Length: 92
Image (cartoon, rainbow, N blue to C red; front, side, top):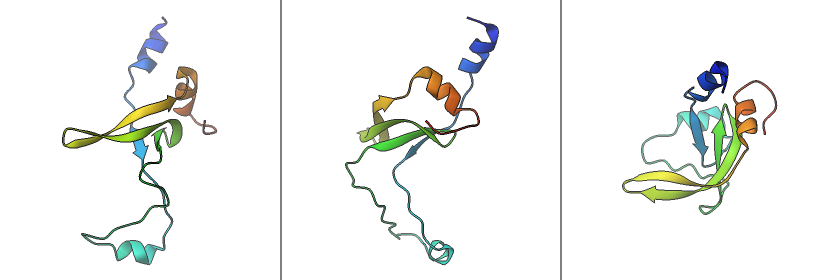
């Protein structure tokens, strides 16, 4: 394995698990406070998106791990697609 590839594979990247998305007016965001509930347009049993560099690289199911939440991966992109997601360009 080339030294460049070894360096790339050791990079730490932020991984985001997106449970949903919703667009609301800024004044509604400013009105949010403790105890507010923001309803998302996704059912509670729908797959969650796994993102790197804001690009979907996999999908999974929410699970409880002790007192924390986790994601059970159901599908994942190829290593080449994941590396491509880390750079500029189109989402996978």
